Image 1: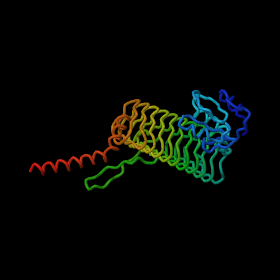
Image 2: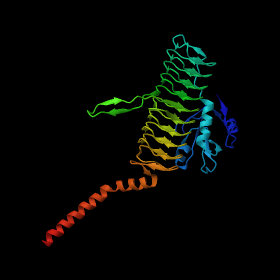
Image 3: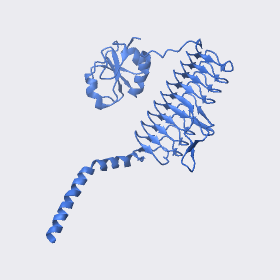
Image 4: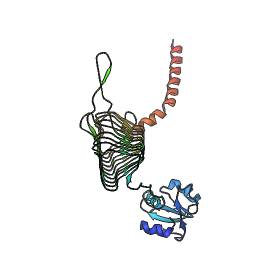
Amino acid sequence: MILTVGQIAERLGAPVEGDASRIIRGVAGVRDAGPDELSFVSQARYAADAAASQASALLVGLDWNLPLPAALIRVPKPEVAFAQVAALFVPPTPIPPPGLHPSALVSPKATLGARVSVGPFAVIEDEAVLADDVVVGAQCYVGHGVHLGAGTRLHPHVSIREYCRVGARCVVHNGTVIGSDGFGYNLNPQGARTKVPQIGIVVVGDDVELGANVTIDRARFGKTKIGNGVKVDNLVQIAHNVIIGDHSVLVAQVGIAGSTILGEKVILAGQVGIAGHLTVGAGSVIGAQSGVTKDVPPGAFMMGFPAVPQKEAARQYAMVSRLPELRARVTELQKRLSALETRLG
C-alpha cells in the first residue's frame, strides 16, 4: 500500500505539520526508517534519534515541542497510532480456504460448522465441535469432545486435549498445548510418587491469544479457566486449576503454580513466577523476574523476590548496590578497633 502523510493523518483524525504530500510505503523504528517510511517517537529522550531519522513522517505526542526534519502527525498516544498505521502496511496472515485437506483425519462423529478449514495431517477426534469459520492448521490435534468457538484459529502443531473448550475469535500459535495433565502426584511412605488422576478440563474464553509453546494444564477436577481477552506471550506455563481474569496479560516465560487466581487486568511481566494457591488482585502489575510468594492486593505494583511493593523493592536494590562500600567500611573499622585494643593492652 502507498499513502501520503496527509492520507494517514486523515485516517487518524490528526493534524499534520510539514509536507502532507510525502509518500509513505511502510513503517519502521525511528533509527531504521528510510525516506519513504513512517515512525514514531513518544519520549523526549529519543529526540536525538528522531532528529537523525530519515523517516518522512513521525508520529509525536500532542505536547511535543522539539523541531524535527520530518513531517509531524500529532496524536494523543504515538504508540497506539503507530500500531494502527502499521496495520495498513502489513499484509494480513493468509487464511486457508474452507475445506478439509485430503491428508487430514476428521472423525465422522465430529461436528463442523460453515467455512471450516482443516489443514494437512490435522486430526479431529470423535465428538469434537468446530464452529463456523474455525481454522485448524497443519498437524494440529483436536481431541475427543473439544469445542472450538466461531472464528478461532489454530496455527500449526497446536494440541488441544479431550473435552477442553476454546471460545470464539481466539488465536493459538504454534506448538501450544491445551489440556495436558496437571502435575499432581501422591507420595507414599517409601518415597515413590503415584499419579493423581487429572479429570478436569481447560476453558478458554473469547478473544484470547496464546503465543507459541504455551502450556495450559487441565484441572485436577473442575476447570482451569482463561478469561475473555487474555493475552499470553510465548513459553508460558499455566498449571492446573489456575483461574486468570478477563483481559490479563502474561509476558514470556511466566510460570503460575496450581490453583492460583489472577483477577481481571493483571499484568505479569517476563519470567514472573507465582506460587500455588495464591490470589493476585485485579489490576495488579508484577515486575519482570519477580517471585510472588504471598497474596497480592488489587492494584499493587510488586517487584523482586520475594515480591514486595515496587518502592520497597527499589530501596532494597539501592541498599544492595552499596554493600561493597559498606563491607569496606566495616573492614576498616574492624582494623581500627583491633589496633586500639592492641594499644590498650
